[in-house]
Image (tube, rainbow, N blue to C red; front, side, top):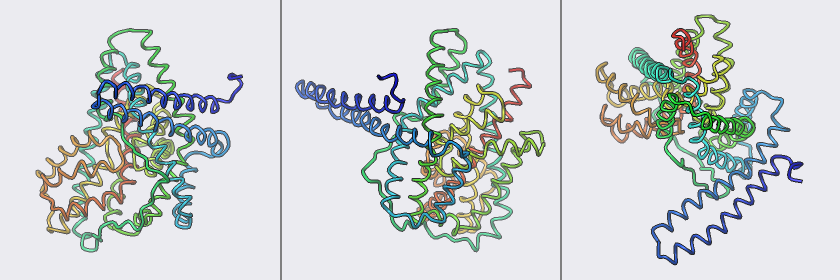
Length: 459
């Protein structure tokens, strides 16, 4: 009977059984800890238990919606078209959507994000570890090439941002709007949802790289089979769960920012700073792809077409990390090197921040012009860039984390006042979707260059 059941129904039965078992185990362990007066362990156990229950509760709507979306709603429409339709719908009709409907979709989006936050460390480890393993003893050299390319790219775009800002900002800054972002009405979920990463992604990344390098020098067939099977499970969850449900996830977040009045603010205010940043990003990204494809316009536009879904996904979710499954798929199409794509794209999503290296320097310089009428000299700015590249390791593609991690750097290096920090924060959060999109899109160009370097070196 179980064999004839559809997969979603099997998963729902397993989910319900695990949830019921967890409640029974809860009562037993809590009673044991209380009897032995282990009060210190009770709170830790309750926290772990609540996180597991939250995961199982999140899994329930995730299975249903993923199955329905994959089988009936979105199968025949390409992902970029789906995302463009959703963005256009929210822009034109989002303000007319009833608040209850917006809350329902936003609640699902947060539940989905909670599942993704739990899943991300496993995805990162599986893809990076097996990707490094595919290169065997040449893995260390491939990683060094990749890290060198990432650091070079970050520094180059940050320096281009400085030169552009120094030349153009003085003529734009007088008409810039510096009012802070005001949220008209905060949209809340139907019930409280706690979102947190079970482990910091940069720790998982470092562990995956070290673990992969160590095991690339040893041959353990059984262990490797287990890891490749684990990777297959991760890929199936991405292919049949995450990607089909992605438009619904994006829809919930876009409805939220539209109801809060932020979506239209993105296009109405701060136009001069926005136009400058977007122009630098657009020019650099196009030139980046042109260089990556050997200055062939045909190959360049084909590569851009393949990578464009990752741009839309990162824009909609404000995270290059969440766009990672789409970015990996695009990288495979553009390079034909699955092992490199699966190893490199998760690393780039954590270390290569083209958008941040554009947004932050120009916003910092614009704010300095507004408050002090000066732009930092090259030496001061170059030190800032080196610190910026180092600090970006901790950003890990998490939405909204960039500005809060870089705030101490602005205070220490440039002496920003609290008022200046508030202006930069408001501006940064307004244009963060474009920064995240540039991050993901830039990864797609860099992977093509890295693939060419590796091929020429014979790896």
